[in-house]
Image (cartoon, rainbow, N blue to C red; front, top):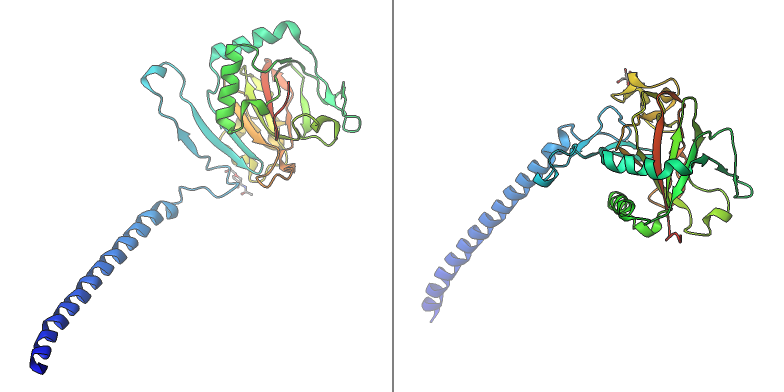
Length: 289
Ligand SMILES: *[C@@H]1O[C@H](CO)[C@@H](O)[C@H](O)[C@H]1NC(C)=O
């Protein structure tokens, strides 16, 4: 029995040691695989392709491949221009036809722009905002609905949170001095709550001036590739040059829902040509129209 047991134990010890070797081999393979995976993941991270926050010289360009059906349309891509404030340009967001449609709708109804009085919450005339403008009701027709749906996709915020589109016209010398889009009063936040984000669409090119400027943006503002094309006013902050069809999205609130003072922005005076733009203000809650 003893011998038998010893004999029977021998092959079992042999099999357990081969199991051990097999297990070690499997583990070794896993370790190699994990190291490989980490190696592969760490290569792009270390290659310097990911820009540091506020490094305005290394603007990321994500090109969107257009389908065959969209041939003849200008290329669309989103550019991160700043993290403080969080601001993005969606190139060729609107077609030329959509831009012309919005201008055509608004033109007969333009009125001198007003600003919100921070004490009373009421609109009033002001020297800081010298443009003229009008509101287009949310969802008023198919083209407007398409644009509003596109804005919802771009911002990830439903159409119902948006105010009506405002169309603005700035002639030579007209401007909008730096301000916040969020409210300081109780009155204006009753419907929809605070303004969380703004989408500013350029409906025309501007020959000179008319930039959207963020004077409180963090980062080296002179590192933007278009620095030499900016007006004196445009050089006072991080600036975006108006280009027909482009949309600028920026957030007035941080991800933690606090107000972001770096979202301070203004419209520089138009120096040559004239500027048409359209603004969609987006609220924290649904906005009833
Ligand atoms: C800002 O960027 C410009 C252009 O890239 C560069 O010449 C300048 O040295 C930078 N300034 C600072 C303070 O980094």
